[in-house]
Length: 191
Image (cartoon, rainbow, N blue to C red; front, side, top):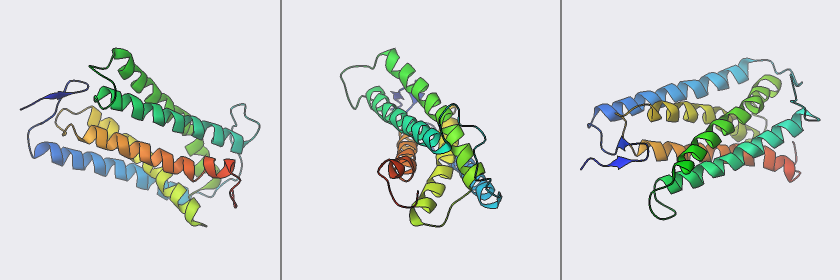
C-alpha cells in the first residue's frame, strides 16, 4: 500500500532507484562535511572575531547562538513528532508544520556565524577528544543538513529517510552544543 506521510510524500516509492538516489544525496552531504573539515584543517586560524553581532565577545556570541540553535533543534523534534502522529491526537494543525519549517531555517541561520567563526577563527581542532568531537560533528551538521534538504525535495527517496535524517541532524546539533556551549557554561577545562 502506498500511503502518504507528512508533506504528501509517498511512503513507498519505486524500489531501487530511491535508495540509489538517497545514497547519492548522502555522498553529497558527506562531501560538504569533508570540504568544511579540510578547509578548517588547512586554513590558518586567525584567532580573532570578524564580527560579534553586538555580543560582548566572540565566545558569548558563539555560546548564545549555539544554545539558540540547540533549543530550536528541540522545537524541530517536537514538531516533527507531532506531524508524524507520535504525540498528540489527530492530524497536526498547519501551524505545526509552519513552526517546524521556521524553526529549522532559523536554527541553520543562527548556526552559520558560529560555524564560520569556528572554522575561520579557530580552525579544525584536534588537541583534545572534546575539541575533535566538536570539530567532526560541527562539520557533519552541515553535511546532514544538505542531505536532508535534498531528500525533502525528492519524491523518489524512501519516506523513512526524512525522519531518520531529522533525528541525525538533531543528534549532531546536540553533540555540537554539548562539546562547546554547554562545556563553556559549566566551566569545563580547556575552553
